[in-house]
Image 1 (cartoon, helix red, strand yellow):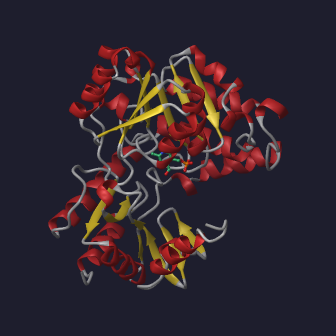
Image 2 (tube, helix red, strand yellow):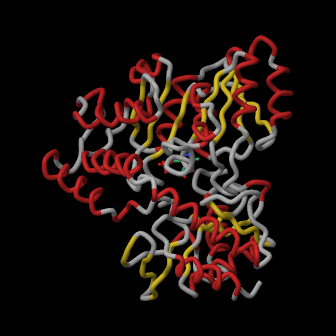
Image 3 (tube, helix red, strand yellow):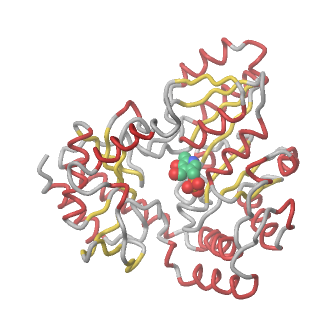
Length: 391
Ligand SMILES: Cc1ncc(COP(=O)(O)O)c(C=O)c1O
């Protein structure tokens, strides 16, 4: 096939998205009024599809920290830490993350996506094996593929499926990394981390947990699901992002293993890209401070999550298996999902459109993610707009 012809398929896909109404990939927010409200085509719209779990994007202290850092350190770092050096804030942020996770080491990346690529490609190579949960995020798949290790998928959250596969690997289990998420990003369900950590110990494998959606949400200190399930010390590598509950941008890895310090010399997604900007590091550090000093944000988030989950469940919608700040409504098929997404947008509610193939079981979902910044009235409005859907 000539080089450019393969884009015919992407073109058809794109026009199919706009067939029913607006193309969900092309929404423009002309203005944001707050962490939970924006303006789309002149219409005030409740933001019910951000990953802004703690509602910190408009926090005055986070904004002030970012502005001050920009004034003092400039707008960008203009290069990688290997070539251009580190700023004091890079090291300070890494020390704060290591402290949060009670680990000896932490490393900051430019995005959560880069963190997954950077950690997986540093850790794994030809001849190594990965056991990957089938619902894992694209960045975990991409990192595993780039590493050239042998990839074996196990059934989502199925401990039996994981154990059958690891047992088959025999002695190679010791060269195996189990890769899972704390909370899965479409259905909001948690990994059975205790059982998975027990298997990894028994077979002498290693374990990586992506806590992108669970940082700030689970665990007493807000570390995520590994902390909540009491197995933080059994996880070899925790990865996460600053772009969700911390309201900034960037990613990290925390580990009890000193080899993490050597990833800086071998991890290409760390070495060959510009380091996080001064404003990003300052807002992230202030957001981590909020995590320590404002535990009530997490409590409000959970109150809000329960209100939305219970409200939608009472209306008879099919939801993920447990209450969580990620609440996905299953639709009949792709066309109904697109139609319902458009109805919600016209009614002033923005949610995420989740279509196959990047979805569990190839389903079509309208995903809401709830924030500590939503008001009970806003959540009632979201529920009433779902109730009014013509399905
Ligand atoms: C589980 C998971 N890991 C990693 C990422 C990537 O994070 P970032 O957007 O910060 O690059 C995401 C983003 O959606 C995610 O859901």
